[in-house]
Length: 286
Image (cartoon, rainbow, N blue to C red; front, side, top):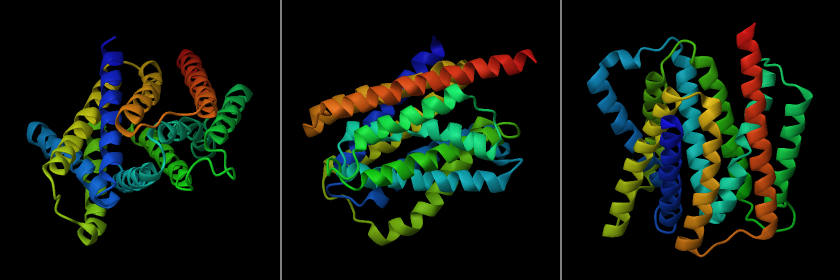
């Protein structure tokens, strides 16, 4: 229950961060927004180093850690660019394609066994995503494609997390992600930086950085407190909060087809997670 509560709170914070980011895209460049978001995580890492020492930075596979940090910068930037043009709830629904991509990449890269049921869930989940996006019908802005790429980068990040989990702690992985992504984003940010012109912008940028760091910390604590397969379905609460914030802040509400596609994605995503749980249980018995 503690793990579930921590994950649910973390998702609430992440949704608030996404809302602030979308609001700020009207006046501030996406590079600057995503840099401020990652800066909050970097500050959290400095606090972690002050508590645990520099041993946090010792990695068994630094090259993979750098690759994961690069993917974090790419996925975060593409999401914020995409969400500038796409309604918040629609954007969140599209990114839920990530768990299916994790299954596909896990089979292709890690040679993980995937049965016909999970392949069927992946296929149905992609159909749900197509219903949300409806390519060629002009329902969503073409930037929805950036969200699909962002989800793909996030999925690849998850695969690298699985590889790294055997040799590095969660703290080490978060530290590298924050340092690498912030370093990479600093370069383009310098070319687009504009000093916030209002108190509202300053408050939102600071709040976004703080909440992003808190959300990341809560997710790590949740994964320490409970099995990933137990708390992972809580990620889908982002759709509820995304719809709520999208309606209250931006006056946007998903249409019936978006809800239909999103429900397909959520149902098949939870089914996929459950199949992974059963597969893990079978593997542990052997």
